[in-house]
Length: 509
Image: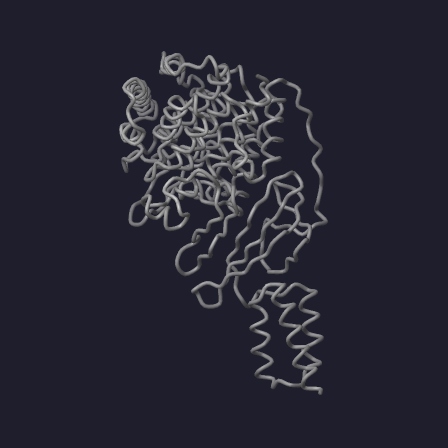
């Protein structure tokens, strides 16, 4: 089997797992699934929607079939940050990709969003992004951030550096600490990278979970050791970490390594005794409030389901999706990345080929393969400074089909605009869908003040021209019409203008 199909399979099936699992991530039970989708088992894409942004300033995010979440968005941002030598451009990722991602993030958790905001500080660098944030009445410290927000994005690092496990380990560690400080997040990411690297060496027909797990678990303390921690960039980070911690980082790291080794042993036992999936994931900490969503538990769950269903690979992803009460999108993405690295693209059924940005996912995979084989050609950076930037949205002055610029994705075209009122007086959400030339599509959301909102120039001029022609209405009524028009989208404004014209014609008659 060609490596190219494995690379494409890894990236694409990770995105498919993410998109499927996002549908079920916040469902309470199979009854809520049935009421929404008419099924108790999700095995295809759906159009669906979710409330975003809270009660008073939120909006309805209407998601098309195959839409992926922040897991895939950040995976792609890491892929773009990998240089021709396989190393991450740490400055570029932390200061360009990560803070820009906030503007189009979908489904992101609090830790990763806070990390992205904090890294924008002038004083913050990739290796000193220490921060705290409030979760209700509780203050969360960066050192306690052990979720899978690092693991979910590092697949490109493993692919770009295939054959060099030491480099994979070091680059994953460096990328992880930009956002997460707890060893569970870091070790989960490093274990996933090692798991991907290892499974790439297998052909599906010769895969054995016993051989695979033995390879992963053997000498794990050595395999996931971090001798580079004494290098200057990491040493300063460790010193800062230790300055406000009751237990040193290296000691905490060893505790989590022991925990991870036990998880791997538990996988082996569960597979040998044919333990059902839900019970197995409970053993692996995926339902436990202390470890649910952690880097280690979710990656371990992905490894378990990959091993169990290696002969039914798509079922393995779908099982992850339907284990309600776990971090379904991330676990399914991990299963997808591993299964894809083993089987390639040939196993992808037609119903999943609708995954968002399918061609771009393939393009990213091919570039990562070229990097791993030292044959990537540096792409010319184009300048689009003559275009309107969407990095900072201050006014509602965008038009359909308008070309815009966004750092880091380059030039794009606006394909949809939506405006949704909020419960907060004088506020509304501006939603702009953009398809970028490079192949990625994004939705940008911005809370706006109504008084700052202006209609597209063409619509405004048309309306103003017709308004002055109409003598039917009083000035007070005319003002009401103006306000009403501002709440309509471009198509609705056109229809309303037609109605105004008919009124004027009848008045003239």
